[in-house]
Length: 629
Ligand SMILES: NC(=O)C1=CN([C@@H]2O[C@H](COP(=O)(O)OP(=O)(O)OC[C@H]3O[C@@H](n4cnc5c(N)ncnc54)[C@H](O)[C@@H]3O)[C@@H](O)[C@H]2O)C=CC1
Ligand SMILES: CC(=O)C(=O)O
Ligand SMILES: [Mg+2]
Image (tube, rainbow, N blue to C red):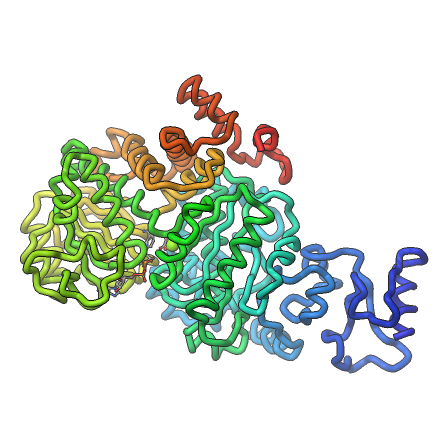
């Protein structure tokens, strides 16, 4: 130990060293070589104990190639250097790192299963671009976000669905450098201090997943972090959040994905998922920790399995500024108003529609209940509105005869004599819906037979396969138009190309919550009301259709062109804040004053707070916001 002290003294110089006895574990800044505090390094002799003292802490250590050991930093060192939460939970040995590096050395990207790439609607071109953008983001965020803002339509499918789905499936193999924060079941009791390891003082938006339902790809455990990372890139590019003030997080409570648990380089906890009280204790601790440090931040729960998605929203929605995937409903409703306009009908025609919805999960039931709210706004009673829906899950048609119905599904379980568990095709044949919505995440369930029936019953059938990524969508645009004779009004969760059919151009739209979430989050954040209400979501939804141009409508597009995403998000934020004001949740005095002068003033106020990376100023970029804090 004396050797260690002497070596440390040499590096730090006199007067800077604070050693407590011989406890080098407690010495802040000390990075031990070899890789573990106890392991033996082949070249080490008794005479040359190889230790170094890092003058930096936290991310600075991870970004310094001399001191960085990546996933091999042992737990004591993570603690000492303020790295806890900044690295994936599983500590890899140098042997494991070596094997991983050699594999990469010999094979490059070739180890990634090509069938996985093609089946997901993701090509090698997509993955190459994802890798490049990731590398760029790691070294120059200003340039990365400038490119993203200026090429949003081109790059959104790379940083987000569908390519991000492939990236999450392979996150443990693609891993180069950490981004965001990892909280795990092993961090119980530590989270409130861990959050202080995040290097940025201000955080305005947090997106968190527990990795349990990543897109339609199921349980991807700690690999799920790729989704909050991608989502927050949209928050910045589309919604104008400052990249230095967003925080992607994963809460690793284990994974039930055995394939992943058996992967040698999987970086999450190799244990089955926690459930019940132990699960909620961890989420509670996380929420209190992040909200304790950043009380004004918006917190979005992303891609939680149905078992926890609805209960978690219910748990926090009245005390914190939170929303989750069921906010996708606003996108669906906005698109349906667009569909009414494309069909030459007024918004009130929403109340005349009949829906068959595949998927009774968090997103599906959110969508159903918000469309029903929209119908009530158009004059139907709640009972009439709920009678317009036929909802199916993997057991088939859901009726009141179904035992153990979840509370959020119950209002939409059929109360008539519809057969319980009836298959999808039979339901469509019997009900003759005007619109199909797919949120099952189970692949091509809108079969040619189903699509042909829709064409038979409707002049303009509304076909919305909203599941992600492309491999899990209920049908492709090409099939929808082919089997609906080019008459489908089409919008899908992941991007689809326009289709030429018999010389006619059939337009595809993308029904994805990226149209709503960045603007909604910005509006909710600036409102400072500490809440996201159904009214705010509905206002956001209604603002979408207003932005579609007559040309876009004539082409059959149910959403405004994504190349206007900043303007769209600005409008969504504006309407969100106005709705907050109406409900008494606009607490930001500056925004209140601007709104009292008129919509244009509030619009300018929001615009002023949106990040444009013309100057590099990560902290304090929003001077007005700091004044209003
Ligand atoms: N376009 C968008 O913006 C969004 C799309 N989604 C997509 O929606 C899908 C579902 O998400 P969640 O509702 O959160 O998942 P979830 O796991 O909560 O629900 C899935 C539902 O689909 C049902 N289901 C599964 N297989 C089925 C089958 N063969 N037939 C009928 N129903 C079946 C399940 O029973 C369950 O009710 C995912 O693919 C996700 O990517 C989710 C949020 C936003
Ligand atoms: C888009 C999205 O949030 C999802 O597929 O889960
Ligand atoms: Mg999602």
